[in-house]
Image (cartoon, rainbow, N blue to C red; front, side):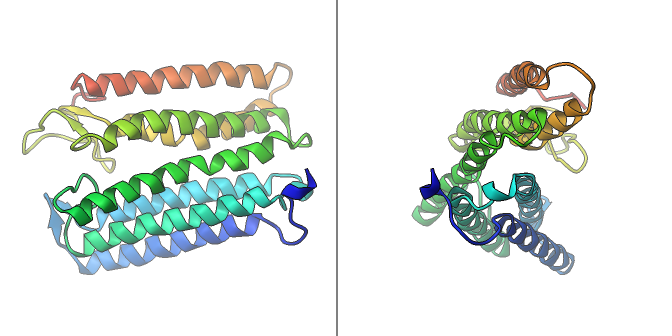
Length: 264
């Protein structure tokens, strides 16, 4: 297995650099939004870039913390460098196009108005798959770390796998739809504060939110279970993973029926 390793450098650093880059981008966009009050369909043009940059901050910071929790000898595996490189290309590519579209007050998602937009939307789909697939390489290394506590190790691996599988289902359906609503909300339809989820019609975003953030939830659960006396954290986490998958798919099915997560 030594062929999979490199001999120099700590591989936590690329993920930390990615996190710092996205934090800087978020702050730049936040300042930019103050001076550009334009709207798209009544929503500030810079809200989507801000949301996506913040989401990538959380994504990359999670992976940085996971890699830092590895045994020192495992942080030098080449697969981590490969994952970080591909994540950087996918993340920066996604943000580049989203920012480009926002600057022109045009939609980046579900925009099929020209051949260029169709191709770019398809490329965004490829980038999104890479963003959720590359953590599998990180989880592979984590799975081999016998020095890591069992709850944390299992939580990381399950979080990555559950997030990948559920996001493929939910985001895959969304990408082939004309939007994230199932139904047509009225002009003054209520929505969830900050998140913007519809309180009137079906909305695919709650299920997407749950699928993505399994990556953060299960490592935290694993840490908590490790600190509890007795019990089998691995078994508990497997049961929780099944329950979480059922909950996410139920929220997804509810949206497909045209029903809001909560009627406001």
